[in-house]
Image (tube, rainbow, N blue to C red; front, side, top):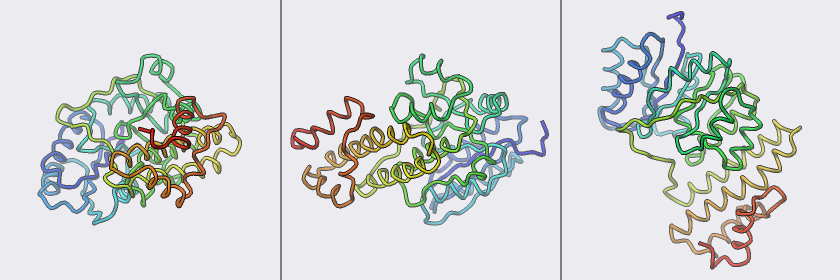
Amino acid sequence: MDMGVVELSVIIPSKNNKHHVSDIIKRISAELSGIEVEFIVIDMNSTDNSVIWALEEIKRSDLRGCVIQSGGGSICSALNTGIYKSDGRYITFVYPSRQYKNYFQDYLSTADDCAADFVFALPPAQGAAQKTALSGSVSPSKLLELLINSRVSIDFTAVMLKREYILRNHIKFYEDCSYGYAEAFIYNVLLYDPKTACSDIRLERCEDSPVARETAPGNVNCYERIDAMLKVYENIKLQRKDNIALTELFEGQKLPSVIMSVVDILLKQGFSYSAIKRSFKQKGYSELLRPTGRTSPELRRKLLQWKLLPWTYK
């Protein structure tokens, strides 16, 4: 392998992660010994010494890398900056709060074997049947269908993408979205017909990496996930004009399921069903809660209960 060519850019968004970022750099550089890798740390206004420790690790180990200050911008702005500052053939995103170990080598091999633009693996919770069905090269349309129906899941912090594919198709994170942004990004990646490959590796979390999912700390952030999915919906109609079934599936299954998940969050936060309904009507979300022939029986029941007997909905 040509050591002059950067094979992988590891993009690490960080804010006040103490020594964790330098530990990540040390671990991944050891895993990828002999492979040219660069580390792009996007610092989001840290007030601790995490940036200094990260830079010291890059310098001490004679690695390629840099720290970019993203100021007070959103996480999506930071990730977009990382993509456009990267030089690797492939890029991956690593969060200090949720890391997997020993998958980089396998992903790079899978990417080369399949000439893939997008490489992923199914989380351990997925069944053996799904893993067998998806191993190797996978149709993006099939993968979109499985994602919409919640039959598979893809962890954004364990994917690898060909940088040239992302730049050529102008795929970006929605910068006005702080909740649901990773999900929207994966959908958009799949809409431009990438060569997609599923690795059969078993993803394993780093023991010192706590499980931390995207959370919605307030009702405004909840709505951002709906708005992100509406943008994806518009992109599906634009990019997949010839696939009416996919558009109908997203409209009949994905959009209402996302909206109902927001209902669940808002009810837990103490909002009344009448307040939620009033807010949804003002924002135009109520129009999206009509079951279609593409709506699953379970979701159909939830939609009807919410419409007819909202005080019994839990």
